[in-house]
Image (cartoon, rainbow, N blue to C red; front, side, top):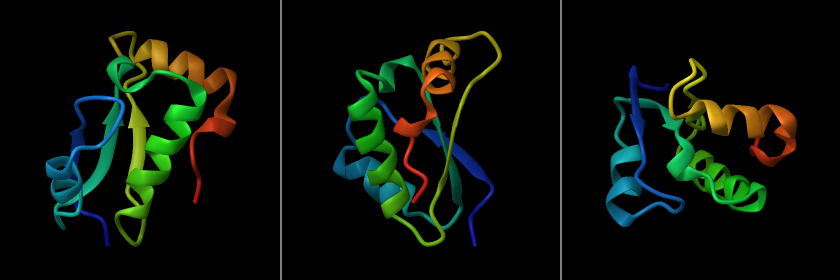
Length: 86
C-alpha cells in the first residue's frame, strides 16, 4: 500500500538519501519539476528507478498548473513513452 505523502527529488538522478526517503512507507507519490528533466532518455531512467524502489510502485506526477513543472508536463504529453510504466 502506498502512503499519503507526495515528495520531490532535487535533480536528474536520485541520491542515496532520496532513495532511502522514497522507500518510507508514508510516501506514495513523487512530483517532478523542470529541474528533474534533462532528456527523454534521462527521464525514462529516472522514472524506472523511482518505480523500482517500491512494490506497488510509487506514482510519479508533474505539476501541471502552469508553474515550474508545466514545461516538463508539455514535454511528457508530447511524447509520453519516456515515462516508465513498469
